[in-house]
Image (cartoon, one colour):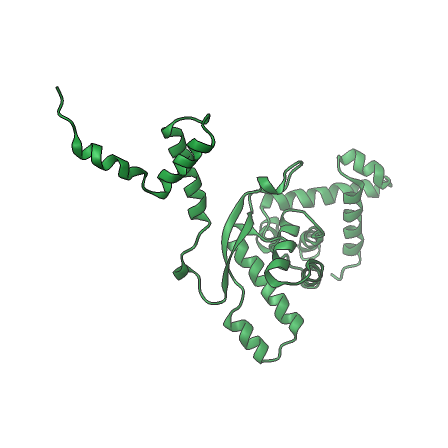
Length: 256
């Protein structure tokens, strides 16, 4: 007959005296049909993994920084996808830096300082694998989304650059200038698709897709096809056709 293992008997209850143990117990009590201890322990581990990924210890954050949840770059919008189903990435962003202070002291115009902060926040999010929406930026800076969007769109238009924001890289909202910039870099500046992809924060596949659609729309237009027929032939919306036709008209008048 095996002797009782008193050490194991006395210390085993200590295993549940932890956050993991209490989560597992709460899950079993609240959802008794999910399964036994092994299942609820697994669920507790999954919850802790999410919690730990979204927390940052105090010594990681510095003065002027904040923790924010951005949208995963590799999780673009799709039909019927709701906000609850979007993958989020915890970000550490520089809300205020010494450069911001120096710019203020140097009396640089407020609009220029704001633009620099907007670009910095978007680029920092992009470098950490996520994108910020206009709503994100508006909430962070306490300013209207429309004002910030206009500021960034004008910068992209005049400087022929793409700021890595969700409106442009995920094709949502009003961020459609990236199509024009990509086509401009290809047909006016004669840059290769590889260089364009790097300069516009797009994948090579995305650049090829935009350029290919532009070529097809322009070819159909040269055949005197009306926009609704072009849309039907290419399997896209008439609005998209009009966008590319507008880009074609702009590039036709662009300086060599």
